[in-house]
Image (cartoon, rainbow over all chains, first blue to last red; front, side, top):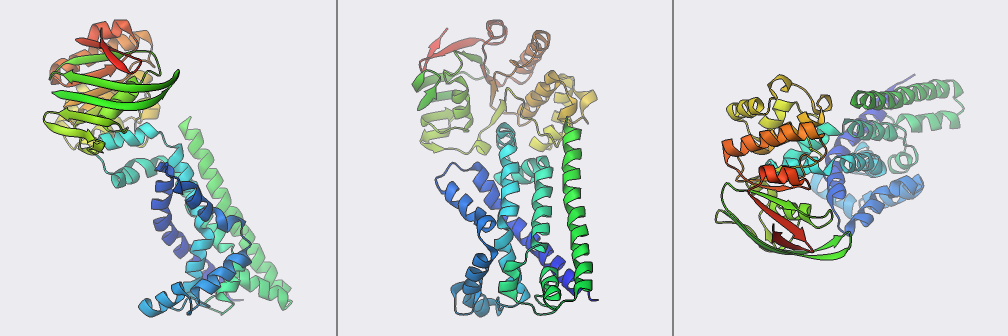
Amino acid sequence: MSFEPFILSFKLASLTTLILFCLALPLAWYLSQTRSLAKPFLETLTALPIVLPPSVLGFYLLWALSPDAMIGSFFEEYFGIKLVFTFSGLVVASCFYSLPFMVQPLQNGFESLNKHMIEASYIAGKTPLQTLLFVALPNMKPALLTALIITFAHTVGEFGVVLMVGGSIPGETKVASVAIYEMVETMEYGTAHIYSAIMLALSFVVLLSVYFFNAMQKRRRF
Amino acid sequence: MLKLSISKELEGSEGKIDLQVELHIEQGSFLAITGHSGSGKSTLLRIIAGLEDAEGSIVVDKQQWLDGTKKLPVQKRSIGFVFQDYALFENMTVKEHLLFVQKDEKLAQELLSIMELEGLASRYPKNLSGGQKQRVAIARALMRKPKLLLLDEPLSALDPEMRNKLQDEILHLHKRFGTTTIMVSHDPQEIEKLASTVYKLHKGKLQKV
């Protein structure tokens, strides 16, 4: 039995979480501070991956990332990276797929901070970036942890989008969820059982750690 | 020291208010602003701090803080601001609050000592009483050696005994640093004790009391 699909899943989830954190942080901060009319539109766009069927998202991504389309040709021309049926393509697709799971907890975290606390930092002469790093983020650790872990877990758990954008190339795009699907198709139920049990146990531990940490934080505060 | 002439339309508790304020403050004075809740007192302080937009002009020691609608950023104004809800940084100890504003160990030590916070220097806000929290907030506001100290109902959440004690400390600090101060307050006894000039904000206009 090979663990390659698991390693691939975790590599994909780690990279996606890292990239999304950097992209989502300024977006979530902006959404929490702005009163602009653009806010509901941006919030809607961010939330779309939650409601869209993965096949719809996968289809559009496949279309956008193909070498004939704008994003695909841009990456191929300037970075020499192919985005369809490659690991890089999976990372890009996962960033779209998991975007709301990073943005929403961060935005909620920022919005739950005392507004006066942020203003007090500005009055102390600190820039928005300094305020974000030294005042806002340290005071919303549960939201921060939720965003990171749920994004990671959600990316490990994705299936439809990766199958459409990545296919099932061993060692390149065949992640754990896709591998299980194939095992069931080819009636390798024994391996499918082991793989599924590992996924179930890991997901349980990851989610439990988030809820446990948040419960402890709340207890310490009161 | 401060010359202000601003206007702003507010949604007050009794409908729209046209806030039209002219104010001139001498260096080192202690000014109190009183008035009904919803009369725009806090908004006026926030406009001076740069936390709210307004139209007009604010000049502090020849530096233009507001010119028409063009604002000098909050960060560049030499102010200290004390909020009614303290607004402390939950992730920082008492001493870290002061050093976050300015890495001036000597001034931090002096303020801790005046505010009787030395024994609490390594505590976090969640382990402080209301009065202690507000002392930290006042000390933090003075760490930048501001030209202007703005107090927004700073003691209204405290019990009478603690109020009295903190009033004495604010008075002491005002004598020690000579910082020009504007305080919003409801409490006539407090105003009497601290302020040299008193204004009432009524229907969007300031009236001298």
